[in-house]
Each structure stands twice: as C-alpha cells, then as structure tokens.
Amino acid sequence: MPLPREGELVRTGVTTETRSRVQVSLFVLIFIPVLLACAVLLLGSYMRLNTLSNESASMAKELQELKTDHNRLEIKYESTFDLAEVETYAKSALGMVKAGADQTTFVRSTEGDKAQILGRQGFLANWERKLDGFARRIQEYFR
Image (cartoon, rainbow, N blue to C red; front, top):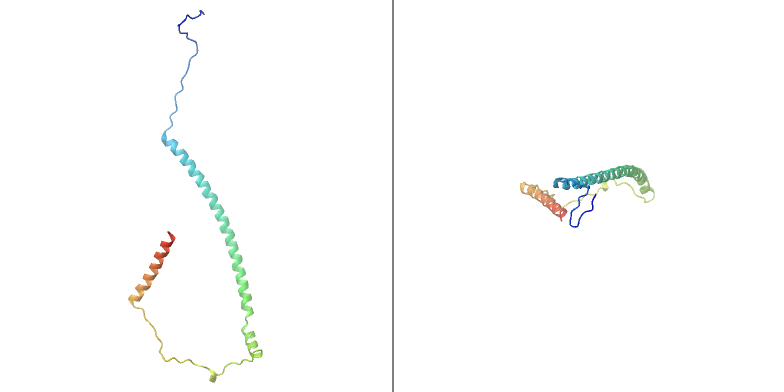
C-alpha cells in the first residue's frame, strides 16, 4: 500500500454503524411509575390491614376476658349484699324494727299533679333540637 500524499484523504476499512434510537412513548414513561406507586400502596395497605386484623383479634380476646371479669365481679358484688343479712344486721346491731301499718307516712301535696302533653309544636321542636345537635356534631367533625 502506497503512502498517502499530503492533503489526500485516506479510507480505512473500518465501517461505522449507527444504532437506531429506541423511542419510548410518554404514556409508558408516566404509566410505569404510576403502576409501581400503586403496587407499593397496595402492598402497604395489605400490611396495614393485616396489622389491624391482628389488633382487632387481640382486642376482641381482651374484651371477652374483661366481660368474664365483669361478670365474676358483679356476682361477687351482689353476693356481698344479701338482703337477709342486711335485715338481720339492722334488727340486731342497730335495733331497727319493721314499720307497722299504722306507722306508714304519706306525703300530701297542696298542689295537684301536673302533666304536659306535647302537641305537634312540641314534637317538631324536639326533632328540631335533635337535627340542630346533629348538624353541630357534623360541623365540629370537619373543623
């Protein structure tokens, strides 16, 4: 191969190839991160649901134990106040006796009994108060 002269271009046997660019659509660029974020949120939700389910089960078990304790304590409380024992104590220790028929006292009032019948106005006012209270609770919730 002869030497090239000055200013002469030399061609070598090296060929260059250009790669074609892969075009990714904007939809794919947005959809994949959104899909991954949804998957992460879904997994987080399942984990939270599992945690809450376990807590709920333990709370239900604790509630059942507390109900059992409540029933046991209520029975114990009721057994401490046996009416026969109270009557015996009142008669023997305190010297009390049952009142006879001639010892009964009546309370007499100079004024008669009084009753008020709610008409339609009273009925509506009652519902108005309930609705007003409900509206206030809703308003308080969103503050």
